[in-house]
Length: 219
Image 1 (cartoon, helix red, strand yellow):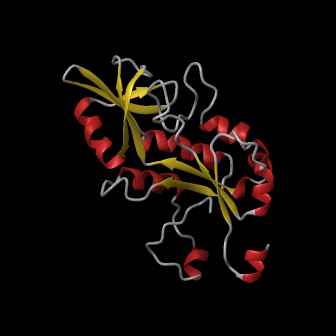
Image 2: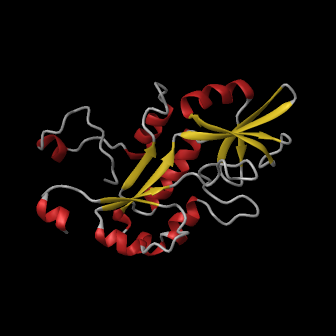
Image 3: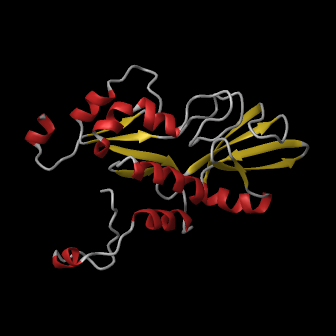
């Protein structure tokens, strides 16, 4: 209230966790903020004992957490009553491991680090893009000096499924971590355009919106 009173026109936002481990009052935060940016990533990372998707749409066997769980369970009160206060954040990066074998969700033999979509798009074509039906995410693997490596990432296909979920729930919109992780590649921008672009209406033209302005239907 103080921000809005003292600084008219300013927005108050909160970067919300994908899983409510800490007992956050998410509905209270939604009531207090203009919007919550859900950090819908880092479900797997350096702490994981197995390889897996940073942003699984649906959970893999033995797990209950996923983007659908985040939207429909963790944020259920907000999703059901104030969906216009939520922005679903997605990763433009992946996670890379050394693994004990080539199987999906293999046991980790050592976390290597995070990757960027601009590189994963090239490498996945080189090594062959695989699709995990359980988490609805792509990944690829390769062997070097007798060691298996796995990279789990998101592409336009997997992100499109998450965008559709956000649209179906009536969210304020979607966002990403982070801009430029896609480099000069067009796939991810094209997916956003396909999901959210609409042709400017006569009313838009009357309001003198630029002809090249992309209108996001959920904003």
